Image (cartoon, rainbow, N blue to C red; front, top):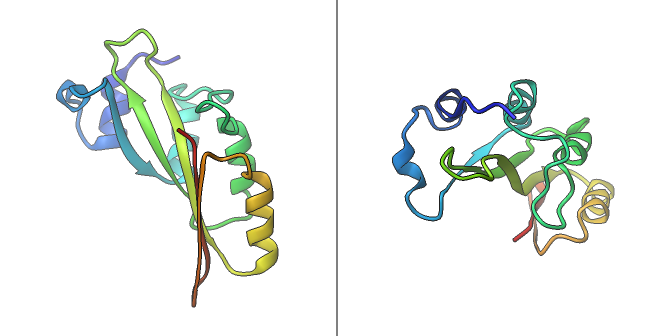
Length: 130
């Protein structure tokens, strides 16, 4: 695991500042699949990392292939904690048709929470793990 937290935090948050970790030792942000690829390439996130019973980072990234507009909510753990890491805790996407919605629900059906709504853009779906 890459311990260069300053590089990681400049990439994720725009600056390296340990004050962001005051409450619980974690900091949250929203990222794209390209950001996850960067974190993987720079060894800031483990491909096998998972939030409790969530899919692994690698499994999330397998879903991303062929789907546009995917967003992830992640948290970064303080460099002062022994469990320093980055973890995906939520995935969200808008899909156009019922088949894609069913595929998403099937893949992520064991999420702790789901939010599903339909609008003129398609199905907006979010799944997260506590």
